[in-house]
Image 1 (cartoon, rainbow, N blue to C red):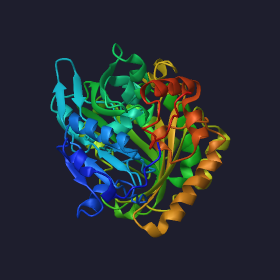
Image 2: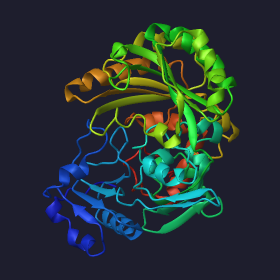
Image 3: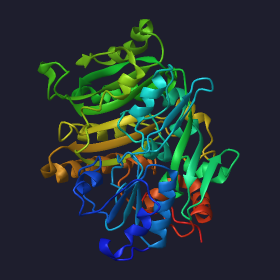
Length: 463
């Protein structure tokens, strides 16, 4: 749907205000710049109007208003989306960040979460009962975006993707209808929501299965960057055979300041970020094979609340940095792939990094066409992230990420986790969904035939 081209003063905002209980923020309002700021400061979009919703009725009103007036429409949850698809120029942003309700049912081990929550909110609510949801690796990430893209993190090898633990969702459709999607109600929509992104409607509530996770044994183990080839070769063989109670993502980075020892500040490193669901007494047995490959430059492993692990990187990556990232799914790490990683592993800025997140174990026990997520045979989800607080380094971090990705892409699967993609074109989206793409187009045609929800990694409706 094309935008109308009208200025803010020409849109009958009072018509929306009559049915809207939240806050409407326009370019002339003093809070506008704060309201349009998102996690990636590289994004500088200026919507005509931001509708900060308080409830489902507000969402319906905003969808109806945007549709009736032909406004380009973006949906904001946590605002972490790399290419800035939570914002739109010259259109309407339906902002869900004030919708933060959470209801835990410890008897059924489930939680119902509204889309304005970040995962730290969920952790706070569930950890009181010794339970945890499958989420990502940083607690400030929004619930909505991570879930709809698939969701993987520290608990994934044991309990699957976030979407494998999604039980139902409440959705406002493009025509303003409110529906409940689950295995029994609108099962085609429920299938598409599990990995198909924000293409099908505005999710106003997620219901998740929880797991008995209270404390974990976790922390970083780092080697000098010169040990990348030896440690990555060991890792590719070890990880797929490791117990599903063991999770360790591989990383390249530069050692930041505190709490790391001063003598290694600024060192270029590779390493593992561990999460073990067993007891601390077994930690040495689990981690010793990694030490046998190469002597760590630094390690700090111990028992901690799961919520503490989830928030470990929050201070390192606050909102407002410049971000450019590229991703791929990876089935195998060949010697040539490892050599390519070594060529680009020395990051250009202190916050830039590469991560290989394990997505094997429980993920592999779900069929490729059981959900929209297609790459059920991949072993890792890779992200190459150029990050820096200084806008002057924008080109430097972007070029490094692109060059690194181009060097390793030929050794990777063709698609990528949609949450690790910039705006990369329709061919990349189609490659990501593979054999599920045509089915997604059919679901899109049923629930959003005019492609109202297209400010996303877009799946065009079948014709």
